Image (cartoon, rainbow, N blue to C red; front, side, top):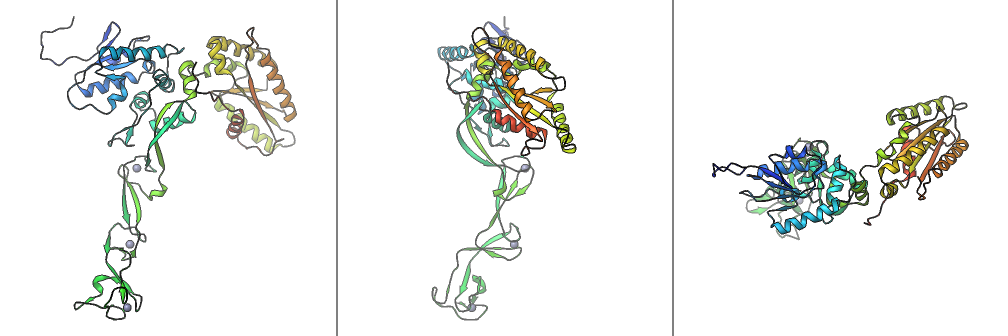
Length: 469
Ligand SMILES: [Zn+2]
Ligand SMILES: [Zn+2]
Ligand SMILES: [Zn+2]
């Protein structure tokens, strides 16, 4: 029972979820498995925003609808509409909106635990929703994405992060709405542009009226031609009577008060208002500000979560952590350079090309079991001196003393193993494979991470379509 003894007191902050009422966002975020819309009430806009940001910061709440029940007094801050699924809606509208979001959210197998998954789920259960930049002159980048900022906290720059997820097709650019030049040093968009002298770059420049004497060709400021109510060329002393015949006025000109240079077009310099770095505008990095929607890879991420853990069964086969693996690869390169006659090796890259489909049709644990079965056979196939490592989607085998011919045989044996994972329902791990042999192939890069990058590009990555089942 809430106390009503003091009716003039401002209403308390509360967040209702189902039949539970929480006094703070922090209390609610700690609850694991909520499946109700979140209904926020708060006495001031400032606290509304703080509360909404705290709730949106929790990855596992991304799939829950969130509404502000009533508007506090004063002007609504720009971020509010972006953070909530509705503000002061009638109950019927709120319920309809909420049912849509929860119905979509019901398709997700996983609770999001990281910002990327959370953002994918946020957009996937709001099919019409877009990540729209809101204009804010106080923000260093002039635009803000409130939901992304809340999820990331201080982890990373939202613009850099959005660019990376767009590259991976978790997000697609819907439309570009602005293009900003940024400070090269601190990435602030708060730049001031000023015309300066093209010779000495001083900004103390003035417009001057000039005359051009046709007799001697002299060009100079108008007032130097004035003498006793007449125009007389200060150089050849001819009296100038008729414009177009004796003289003319060159295109409007400017003069530097510092070095006296006369010029038509001034140069432009930019100065960052945040860090004072100065630059010429054409050298400034440009940022496109975009509206984003969910991409094909984002839909998979929303439904299935990060698939990397499904492959963890492979981390038992002569497994070396990626950073060390790269160092060992560099070491192999060094040996092959030093002893070209006797030292050679191959790097084999593998990728399970149907991993997303398998998880979709079999689920995570059955797919994990397939991977485990494959790993078991792989262990029996590799020599003890062969080492493996794994990125998010690629599997690497470093095979010392293995030339191109033996590497091809090794790949054939490994792909045959995947055939042995075939299940009664015909599903099996499909492997994409590629190999590089040093020094047999002389055109290859000579550093571990570059070689892995090249092979990863050859192996490709998932490019799922936009279809929804
Ligand atoms: Zn003259
Ligand atoms: Zn100058
Ligand atoms: Zn700066």
